[in-house]
Length: 254
Image (cartoon, rainbow, N blue to C red; front, side, top):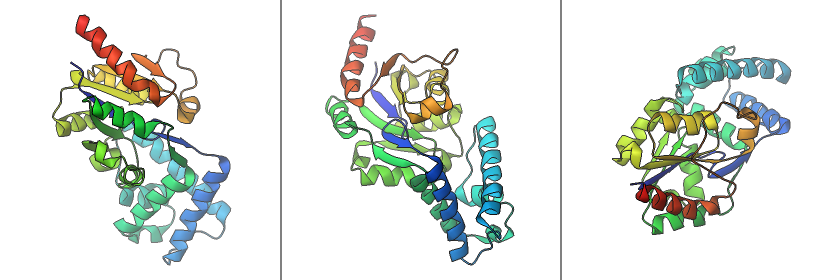
């Protein structure tokens, strides 16, 4: 029987998107933070940006290839800012400040329309709720949930930067299931990327998967030919409670 719904965060519970302008602003703010803390950050913004962009690209390639996520105090000095020796002496607190800044400055973030109402409806109908999210900040996901007033609805929040594993690595799903004390076959996973969210959950034997498209879906996986196919696809979160009840009924008759 399906009992539990686990959600992706950015792109699923949140609408997030970015532009060339927000990316420039995020990189500029990173340089400013280094300078404010007495660290060398290159002679020009252009030079800083070129170095940062290469380090960022290399880290993302490595992380996706290995299904791993490092801590902010490893990512920022060892990858993003590897050409700036002063960065090696940054504290874990400063690295987290940079990581959280990046999530809020690069991306425009807002809770999807109807998200809170949907979650409260599921809760009232007896569903258990949780989050499994890829995020390179230790606290960003928790902060968003708190600020949006929905942290209390989640029994567990599993984040890649805390676990060290990124979706679709099965280990991040396994950790969440252990913390929720639930079998994968009882769970529904709701996400916006076919490969990481739908494919990752299906590989772990989740009872069902739901796709809701986002800015990130169109950007990262515009051609879904050959990609994992969800059990349900929705356009609005408000559709989810009734879709899941219908799925429960259908599975009960099978």
